[in-house]
Length: 257
Image 1 (tube, rainbow, N blue to C red):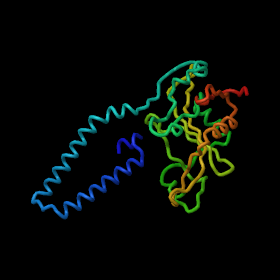
Image 2: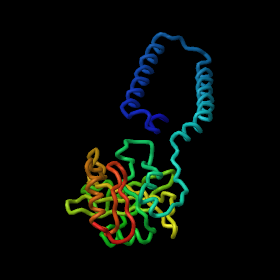
Image 3: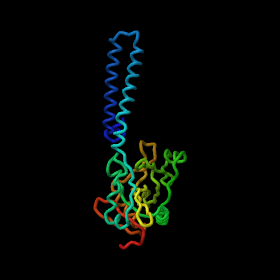
Image 4: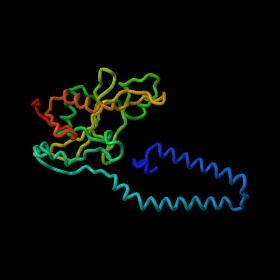
């Protein structure tokens, strides 16, 4: 289960392992039940086995947890650099992925924005981005409603380096989907002015119904490019695509396009 949590094992592999273990347990259980003689101290042996297994598990976890956690830990850097240094290549010193767990296309950062938080939020709000429905018990109704209502359907949070997103805004699309923007403080400050650089994921989502019961969102496979185009056309900031696979860069000021 730990390997599955850290994405070192697939869901199919986990299910196959559980099925194999359950089948072997059933076969051996049937065999022992039909042939083995009852032991007067069977319960004692069972308790000793379970206690030994728990002790071995605790010792193994203590030995393996720290190196495993270090292997997957992401920490935002505490850096300072001039604005032009970041714009001309310093952006590459920041993390390119939100997590080392999961498919690269799901965890990659799509953009870096150098703006103060209130300027960023005000600019996006002017462009039609708004806060999604709040989390908590109120979101359970739309989640299991008979008819999906995208306007009331919320979104799950995402973490970067152990911290939830500081910014989450969305913009409704005419066909019923949304462009969802999540932002994390990278830890980088641009001088002068101590301007923060935000790491963004910008994705196009469409409402779907899963298992015939739950209303949720599905990320469009080609929605990343369309979502970034929506962001660039919505807000008149300065934009730069430094490389093909690099994140889109943005900063305050009028666009020169």
